Length: 301
Image 1: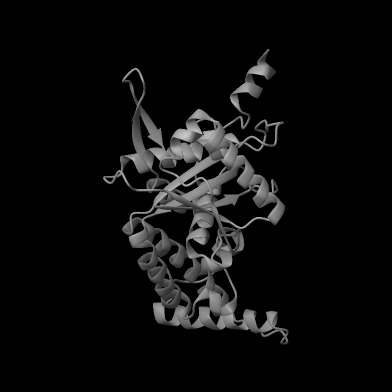
Image 2: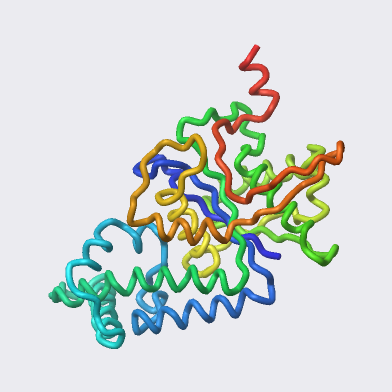
């Protein structure tokens, strides 16, 4: 089982929350899902985004301007929309290559907006078809941070906890979890690796979970890795379109339908504790404090 992880809102700028999002995909489904998404790109844009050096990231595909463009004219015929959208993207790509600006028609702008929204809907439909499970830690931007930088933040620890329970729920006892992150700056990647090693090797819970999750993650380029781009869209749509208990920041109403699609794919399971009490486990959750237990207790004294 592969868990692809990406961050949304961690630059702490416009986004209302920080979201650590993951998509869990079975190995046997991954390539079929990637091919289906590429086929959807051809259906809606007449080309693959990689061919014009674009990623399908939430921040670019679902920005407010795209929704305005999509609704500035009537719904287009699929073939007409695809041709106009292809011309729109190719003109932008040629300009990025250093060629002079090319005029774009209103039809091209409208077609691009409508194609994007239809494409994102198709991506979520494909993810559900290929049994993708979503995970996300939704974090208040005011959440207290650990002072000891060697500790793994609680959003990561809780995300791995949910992934562990998901792996345990699968039929095969031999199912292992591999984790892939969007590549960070090298020094940041090293810090995260050290935090993960400490969590999986030096804490009781982490050590127990290393029986199902390989402690050393992979780092991949998001522009070359379709599944990380999927995690990006999931994180963006949850950030702007879904609110759990105690989350008070406003949503963007136009994002809510996409947020609901991401939310509906969440892992939902159960855990039986030492007292044989059964607890529900949800793959998408809210975190108000990122400090480890020791730091929280010291602050309360």
